[in-house]
Length: 193
Image (cartoon, rainbow, N blue to C red; front, side):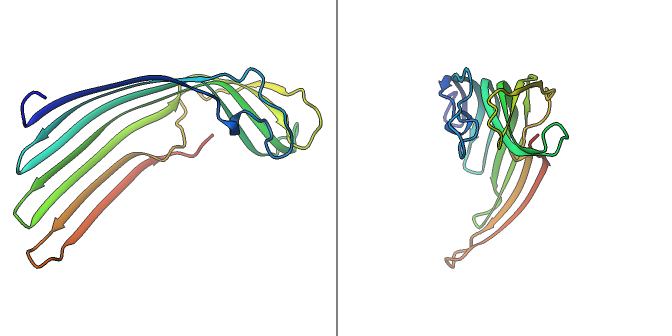
């Protein structure tokens, strides 16, 4: 705390997670084959922000960055490529991703009955490398996969909207009832590749 109205905060994290069970078994519903060389993946995260509080106006501004490295992901889908024509399991190994962005929340008390809150979250979540993949046919007894390279560096992750904005009005008169009006806008929503 700088003083009772102003605060600065910093959070950091570094940890390893075991591979998820869904991303360890190649075809978890039909076989007991597991991914070769499955290993823990690492997460590094940093967040820094500023917080201001007063009786009339409050706001918080935050910046963050998170890197996940060495992850294993399996995509399961029907592949109509002439080489496959089957349900396939795309095992992507050594997948690296990054999420960076800023968030703002501000509120002002216009009168005893009326307050306004504004929120903005603008970020980017994307792949930071081109992982190797192994393609396994789902309904084939062959265990040897087809090896390929996937060029997805800088493609966005399909994790929801990457920009969100909101404006909220709250009216609370003395008669024990209140009215809320929220206006929301979401943008840059990508599908998963």
